[in-house]
Length: 224
Image 1 (tube, one colour):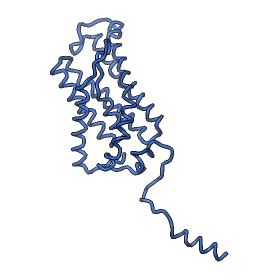
Image 2 (cartoon, rainbow, N blue to C red; image 1 turned 60 degrees about the vertical axis):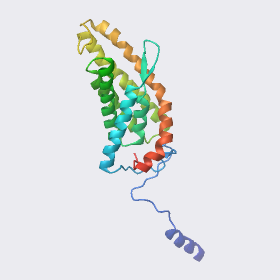
Image 3 (tube, rainbow, N blue to C red; image 1 turned 135 degrees about the vertical axis):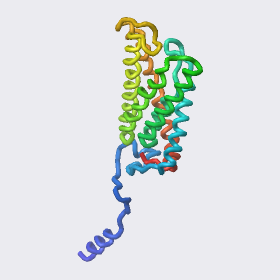
Image 4 (cartoon, one colour; image 1 turned 30 degrees about the vertical axis):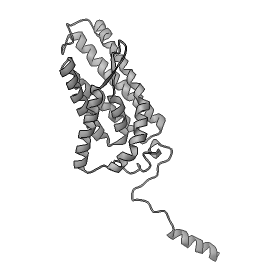
């Protein structure tokens, strides 16, 4: 009895020290190689975040400009989705949102300036791509399957965010989309936007970026 009390007393002093508010998470993607301690949510200082958003925006802009040529009717696929898919997991969701919106706008503005295109295109990039980050960020601390599903869901959103406005623009001849036409013809013309589903090929690339860059983002102060 005395021995049992002695052991109990020792246990009361020998306990694992935890940070205040720390709640262990088990069985989630947050426990992977790059998110061991993401049960805590923290961010860099505001001035650093501003600098990081500028860098991330430049990265997304470059990814929007750089494209991989593909056979018609796809024509090309840009690199940007791989970057903002990963940023949605690695950094604060609003930093990733801002970087995707700014980078997408600037990159597409460069594209229409150098290659031609409708003046609405840069705004379409913001409308279609920035909200994807919020969808993916929702699953950032969940398991891999849920995160992959969120990336698929984000791509579905992006596809229809392009398709529906383009359908209306073709139908009513807005923003240099040509002369007005019927709803059916407008939809048929806009249906090439369904090829945006090609962005799904970047999901494995995004997972690879997340795994490789995770430790660096932890050192920068992000615990998303």
